[in-house]
Image (cartoon, rainbow over all chains, first blue to last red):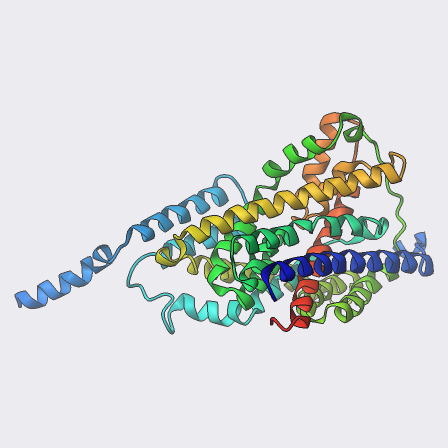
Length: 44
Length: 379
């Protein structure tokens, strides 16, 4: 594999993978917040 | 008798006669690191031991980094085995409040945008003919996250461990200097004045406890090669949020972090041996590291501008700059910059969200990168 194939593959998969993963995290956290909503009495 | 005296004297002057100019240069650099740490308060917890380790290892014939030498033992025990950066991550996890990113989960995306510099710098390093693994290691400086940089360098480019670690920690400490001009250059006055709504508390304790567990499982399944990085930071956070193991959390935050930081610092300093370190390559690595962190800021702010447009002007693009992993320093920089243009602007909590997202983003970027490399059969 030449260096540019390697570099562009890393850019597309690396950055793409990071964005998609964090997007999934973002969705999962929104879901968790809906399933387990904040209740004031938790603090007490 | 005279022969014995001459022999003994030669032992006392051997340090001077074996001193090379590169050792002197490195001792001066060690002193600069000490100055930055002690007088300027730039990451003192790391720059002080790194600077002192650098001075120690450049004194000839001390044997500190030879087999069974004092620094070699520490280096082999904690850096080569990757134990030190991972233990530091447990401490970071225990100290980090991910609440702000959970309040606004979209800020995870700012944490992703803040990692662009890693991959663009990797391309630049390849253009400069660095081998693949070294290019990856140089790119990872853009994670702006010391333990991640050390973890990757210790596995794939040990010859670059010193320069990349120094670059990562030095530039992290320079975030208040590096970021504001980029933020000002890329945003309009109107954008910088944007007031963001203050948070209402919306995250339950259950969500906070489930966060590290879910992230570890999902992130680990996506990028298993980076699981040690992700899992250790999440373990620390789980201990903190669960409240069930207060003693362990306290130990991770204090004793473990402090001891490991000291040992890690002098081990990194020990890699800065003059003849090996004073090379044109080192300067190139330092320059590429600087570019990486600047590019992270550029793409973070640009993504902030996209959010500004998409939300109809509800998101201040400055918070994008906090998408890098320099936690919590870049969030403070954003707050300070925002207040310069609008005294009523309290961006800190929003920026902390992006910053915590950047913490996860940098770890995830490294994890994804390692897993892609593994998939390509390069590691």
